Length: 371
Image 1 (cartoon, one colour):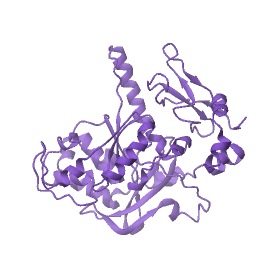
Image 2 (tube, rainbow, N blue to C red):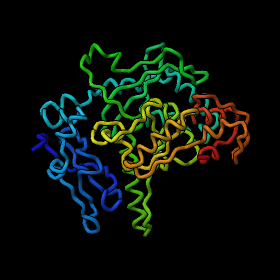
Image 3 (tube, helix red, strand yellow):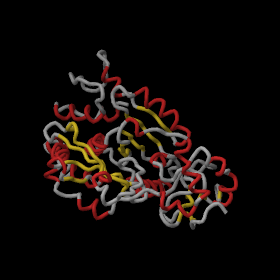
Image 4 (cartoon, rainbow, N blue to C red):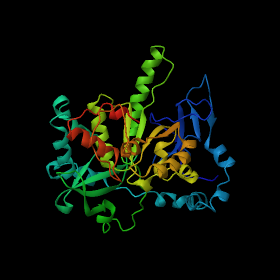
C-alpha cells in the first residue's frame, strides 16, 4: 500500500466535475485527518448512482499511477510515497485562528477600509446599508498595527485553514499602496513559527464552500422546477486582493452577487498552473479545478495571462480572459459604456476603472458586463 493515512469520501457538500458524465456531482476521496483530496476531480465517486455510477477508489488510483516514477520529478510526491509518515510534517503550517480573529476589528484604523467607506458610502451605501462591512466581513479582512495601521489579507483556504496573511499599508485618501509597507504575517511571527511551511492559497478561496452550498440549493430548486440547465457561479480572478474586494462591492451594488465570485492571486506571478499543481492537494490552483473562471489581468499583463489561461484550461470547466483593461487603454477606445476621460496607466487593474467611474459619478452597470 502506498499510503498509510486513513482515506474516506469527502463528508462535506463539496463536489467537483465528474470525469465520466461531466456533471458537478463528483465526491472526492480525502485524507481523514485534514480533508485534503487524494486527487481532486480524479479519485472519487459520482453521486449520480443511477445515471453515471463512476467510481475510482484510492487503491486503483495509486495502482494506476506510478508515483515512484513521478517522484523523481516532483519532490512532493517522493515524500508522499517513500516517506508517508513525514507527509503531515510537510503539510502547510497554519496561522492559529485566535490570531486571525483578533485582527478582524479596529477598522477605523484600517486605511483601505476607510477608503472603501469614503468611496462607496455616499452611493452604494445609501442603497444597500452596510455594503462595505458585508464584503470586509465576508472576505475576513484584518487590521494590523504595523505602519501605524494597515490591512491584512488573510489567505483562508477552501478547507477553512489560514495559510498566512499579506500585510499592506494603504493611503486612506487615494486607496493606493504605500511604497515599502508590505510584509507577511508568518514573517512577522517568525520567532513564534521558526519552521513555518508556507503554502499560499488564493484570496477568497474559503468562499468556494459557501458558493458551492448556494449553488447546490439553487440547482435542487431548478431540478424541482424541471430546469435541466444547472447554475454554476463564475470565479473572477484578479491579481490584487483589493481588486477582489472592490469588485465584490460593485457586484453587490449591481445586484449581481452570487453569480460571480471575485478572488485574487496576490500578484501576476501568482497564476502559474502546471500539471504537477493538480497532483498536489495543497496547491493554490486546486481551488480553480473544475470551475468556470474569468481572468482579469492588470493593464499590460494580458499576453502573459493569456498563456497562463491556455495552461489552465485542461483543468477547468471553462477559462476566458478579459481584455477590458487593454481595450480601455487604447486611445481610440469606443464602447457602449458612458464615454469618459479616464486615463488608464500601465499596471492599473479593473478596480481602478471601477474607482474612477464611482468618483466621477458615472454608472458602473455596463462596466460590469463589458468583458
